[in-house]
Length: 434
Image (cartoon, rainbow, N blue to C red):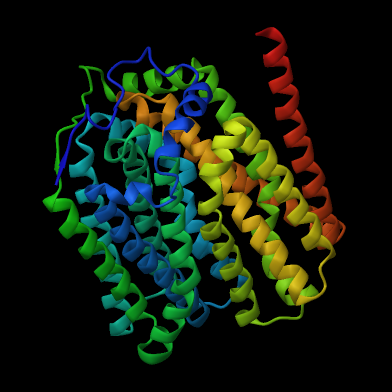
């Protein structure tokens, strides 16, 4: 497979793309040539990577089910069970920006191959220890943390590589397809993982994830890439400060990061309170909880047909406003739902608008960043999202404990309305000034 830098519009110098939203809006007309959400799959290299991502994401979800179930057998305390997710998420919060610097200094194809080998070795080791019956709670957490390190490098490097694979006019839809891949895997991965664990035990979940990394490795080793990264003679430390300075100096990127935080912080109430909604309000068991998660994924997949039409009709700014408001409506509906139909409709609505909002913001960030700063810029994006998700989850957990789950969701919905109103105010001020 051959990827041409010029053919796919990789930005050659820093001074371009100062106003990412304006460029993304101006290029929206190009989508009318082929309005299908599947248009990026016509690019052979992107199509190959997209199918590989489905396999990889499926392995990840199967692994998560296996790790959580294994910990309940090793140490069933709530602290240790929740520590599994913390061990996976902690590297993103701590190391995303340093990892982004690395991804901008070395060949991204080689870095992707290296991370796949590391994750393959980690999951294979965990599978072997579990099969041999010598795994411990702490070894599970340690290996999960190492896997999280690999995931940080993989996610940042892959996010930075997407603009090389498709025309710029299809960037938003290619990111949306990435979300579809993730949500398709989320819809079936837990069920597949549960079946495999019931048949053979948790070790098979880790082995399946290792196999998914091996499959991606086969694709990466056959990929021929022309785009190269360069440190420009700068030290690692100077590359770090240069990247942060670039992000701070880009008004469009700063705007995207602020909007990201203002959305994810209140929207995280969806994820942090979902188990309590399923168990306490609806009286559902683990299968019912899985149904809610699957419905969120289905909403995200369905939104792919709506995303590019919203960009065409509304532009990126107003797409974010509309999606945030509809998400707030879904959150309010969830706060009032006591029956299955209301809960499932709310989940579907929030799943679709979660995907639309984050895909639009991700696209805006990608359009802002030239190739030599892309990984460092996206590492700032990932860090803001991780901190907002963690901080928001803690916030809504505390509010739900002090008041109630329903009241916490109502407050979150109101906060989302404030987010939408602030964006509208900003747009009006911008229009007045211009």
